[in-house]
Image 1 (tube, rainbow, N blue to C red):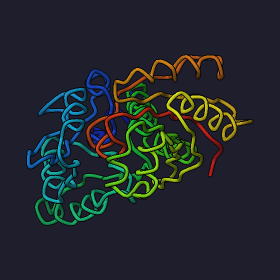
Image 2 (cartoon, one colour):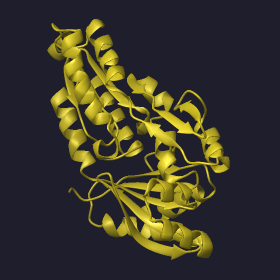
Image 3 (tube, one colour):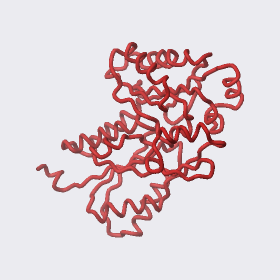
Length: 295
């Protein structure tokens, strides 16, 4: 055994915004804390109360739109205390994008609370901001865990993760604009125009910020516009890879087919958007995630 294996016991902690499939979380021993999502006065616990597909249907038939509650400092402190009591030396903690939630700052507060709860603790907490949502960081959290299992140094995997996050970009193709209007992702005027005239925005989500890059008329124009934008933004990128997210709508198959043709390779993974992410994108959305140029 290497000295690191003898001396270190490392936990990896994230939250349900990562959209890591349960089988991968179990394979790599990744702890996932769940968000609460409130919809029509019902409190849902992501990954526990219902499946992603069931949640999409609840959003489609709901009177209101969902809202999410940040994971609290107390919840994080309790988890950190558990790691201390179980003899962990390090935890790599990757919460939801810092600019999109108070969750990251709550984790910072929890570190102070931990010093009060366990004054003699020696747990090293490596708190990382992924600058994004869903599998764009979830996939690389799994990569960190895999490399640690294979003996990589903790400083090395953290550096690789942060470098990768500076390259990740998302293009969203929403076919329903109700949630995006209510969440402020697009203007109310743009949403009304979209519903009346079939205008669909093509939206980038980079470093936690959304931007309407183009508008197309008709559902059949969405996928080609997304693929062309990804090709343009990633031109010249070495080691290009991509992923496809969706809310279980037929257009996901069109996107998969178009990407295979355009990029000459299969996606790293095709994954359903979880409750926290789809609460903002809406229940009828496809997403193209890809490696862009370093920022």
